Image (cartoon, helix red, strand yellow):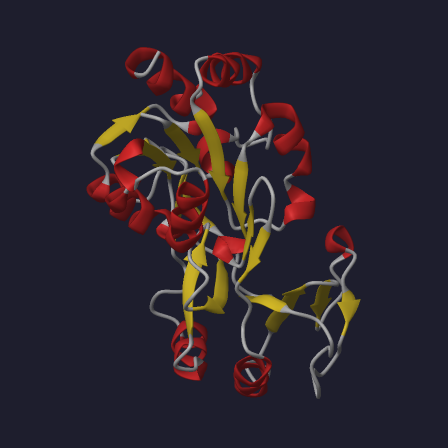
Length: 266
């Protein structure tokens, strides 16, 4: 493999959001051998800077492909303002809704989100203007995450609920939705997928998809797991990812990504 590409949360990162010394050592050896390191994450750039500096990723797909950070350029794939406005107008009526917009100038939400330093738009009668909209984030005040404690796997608590159906019906032709960590509905442009971001990164590095190995755990990783030369699921991945993967490795808390790399690539 010429390139290693990995999801971050619940894949490369441990549950406490740290990267172990062992994982850092293995990834450093990859760099020393000329293997390109890339990440593909749902997180915004501001939330992954420490990992970027710690590991030294050569390129990163952030916000599920809405913003792709290359060595010498940045590619953005935002939601059309008209599409975002149409969706917000419909979903804002859902009882107990938590709605946030990830934009080029930060997060705007209908309730305070201190950890994101969000600007509160109580009714979303209008959208923030002059900002690229990367994604819409929808959750419920009444639904907490369900987790299989034996496997550390997240369970999709929305799948059969009204909120899931109502959000899905509100989508426009140029948007799609996924559920992250079993609890957060993400709405993005159809041009904004991890796989599109990964293809952009590989092309920028002069590589083909067969040159890359991909590690993941959640819904947003399935396409990349299937399309890269090798797809590996950590053992705490959801069943759909485990079924799609070529191989399985140990869980994120057991440094599964680094262990697979050491045993099979170095």
